[in-house]
Image (cartoon, rainbow, N blue to C red; front, top):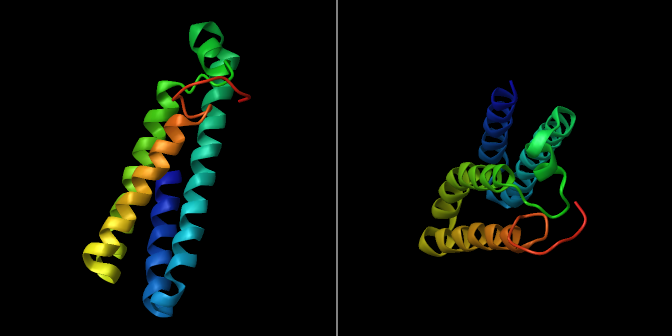
Length: 128
């Protein structure tokens, strides 16, 4: 059900972009990314809660502060790649090669920051 909701949101964002023009593009993209982020965070929280309630080694791995489980990292990577498709199209359409480079530099930077953060699984402890 969430996938259909996000698809509707993306369609609405793209339609609004067509109607409003490129000057509102960054605000529209930011709004959509925020909605996706909210969905991902809610889904991760539900999975963690289910794993903790279920007990066992998975619960300990998920509950450990700063553990950055494989599932969290993998999910973040998938979401980033899914968002990369429309962002690449927008960047290429608006800025050609330079727009494409900026979009992908941002995607790489976000993934590197996430991987190095205590919660992203790249290292170190910290509060979950």
